[in-house]
Image (cartoon, rainbow, N blue to C red; front, top):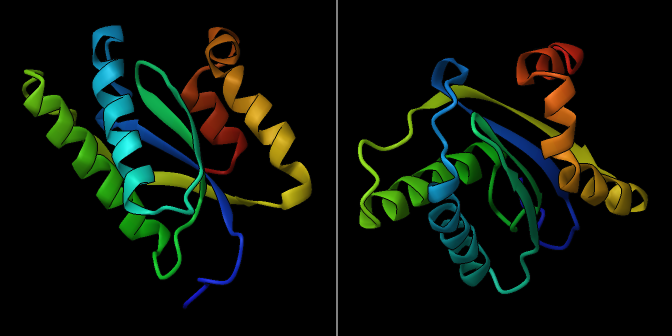
Length: 136
């Protein structure tokens, strides 16, 4: 469904296969480069993210004519390409599942703050526990 004239904000959570803690601190610049490529591809795009050892949280304004599935596939591909180009092999294996929920415009500020606190949050609650709370 075409939503090119809408502001559809989505909170995505992508996690590694078997929730393995394989995303190292050294990989973060490469992953950030991949996120920047998404912004370059869509001039009206906005993106906020938090990178952890076994998952990535993203708050993204969904590009027009792009499904969540397509965006997830594209992001994972860009991350893998950028990591490979920068010498990180083998590439991260992603779980086929992910979590996505829409975010209303009046909750954007709170959701951005939530992303900024992910590192602290996951010291107290695991991704598995968080996904269980989200119904996954």
